[in-house]
Amino acid sequence: MNIRALNISKSFGTFVALRDVSLTVPSGRLIALLGPSGSGKTTLLRVIAGLEPPDAGNVFFDNHDITTARANERRIGFVFQHYALFRHMSVFENVAFGLRVKPRATRPSRAAIKERVMSLLKMVQLDWLADRLPRQLSGGQRQRVALARALAVEPRVLLLDEPFAALDANVRKELRGWLRRLHDDIGITSLFVTHDVDEAVEVADEIVIMNNAAIEQVGSPEAVRAQPANDFVRHFLGLP
Amino acid sequence: MQYPSARTANKPPSALSDPPLVRYLLTTIAILFLFLILVLPLILVFASALSQGFSLFFAALRDPDALAAIRLTLITAAIVVPLNTIFGLAAAWTITKFNFRGKSLLITLIDLPFAISPVVAGLIFVVIFGARGIFGPWLQAHNLPVIFALPGIVLATTFVTLPFVARELIPLMQTQGRDDEECAITLGANGWQTFRRVTLPNITWALLYGVVLCNARAMGEFGAVSIVSGHIRGVTNTMPLHIEVLYNDYQFTAAFAVASLLALLAMATLLIKFFIEHYHRRQINAGTGD
Image (tube, rainbow over all chains, first blue to last red):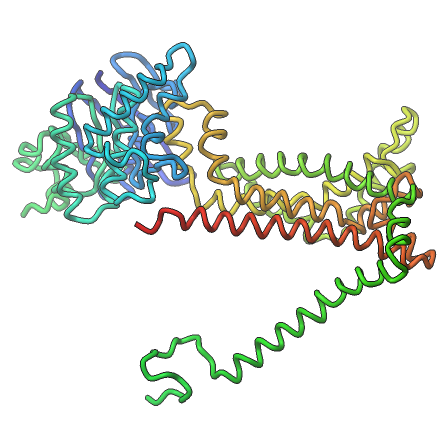
């Protein structure tokens, strides 16, 4: 499933968050949206997710125009910076949520839900915490639960909004490598927002550098570093 | 620098600690004040109610007018509390989950009943629905009494108790933000599922708290109801109004008997509120230990 955003514009009052931005995420790739805060990267992610309606432009999943589809119809997985785990539900119930709210006709059986949730928790190596509440987990564990929850509904694309920004440095580094390996295993089209250059370079197949409501450059980490498109990119990447 | 003495050597002084004398003095003043202003009057209400013995006390409560007043108060609360619960939820949801023009105006408007005197609130409804009011003639022609009848009492009480639930919910829902709801939606939940499974469990305790306070005020409201009720004995007198009528008739024991019942209701409310807070705190503390 590829993602295409075409000529997206979005303003909040007088603040222009996105100015005629177009972006393609090829199927099965892991792409980083990199930029300073206020550059519009999170807004672009939220427009793709359906959490924010664009003022102009269209979003396509595999040539299907989904611009007017609601977020709950898009079959996406979204991971929030602050995890957004449901605090009153156990880890198991958090991961099961997306399956339990499905219409009766497509909802898996109780046993199937249990099996799926436990296999996801095993994948993120947290099956031993299934009965805990979110507040009993560490930040890194919480974000892994959030990822398992997002994947439970078998999303067509995975969108991550600064997924590691709230974690401390060691955990961040560990989870980066882990996300990369996970992506290699399941190959889901993924787009993640970050302001951390190292993170983008280390994890992503391709980097999209944003500044001031527009995209400055797109390319593989090596290509972008070898040939920065302009002074902003050069400075932002910390190149001489 | 040398701190004042009277502190044990191995206990570092806290920035907020005062000399013991000041502490005792302040505590004594606070307790004395509470006793004089809150506890003593409450005791006196019950003492006066029972001053002529239990038989007179119960006779006052079994009086048909008293029973009618109790019934009217309960009916009014039974209508008003659910109404304001639904309104409070809707208002808090709207204010915290959406951005729109006039949002801060709406928040201010919700506080209006707190700012305005209940008497004025009552008069507003007389102006609108009274015999010489805007809709009065039409209502009279269709035999739909509002003022001096149950609808007027319900309206006035609703107005006065409108902020309680919304006021409890708005700050809580604002700090909780929209992440949980947005997350539920990306996971495929519809609006109702999101509310039922994510929002409501997050606000249960604040909601209960607001409902309890709303109920207490709905049962105790005097000023606004006094204007719209017309004081028809056995028909449009709520408990607070009935107490006033008895008091003005020099039936002090009877007045205090009904007053003590109202005070009991208030104390029951406080007890429920206490348990909600207590239970909620235990819930929060449970599991944060490890």
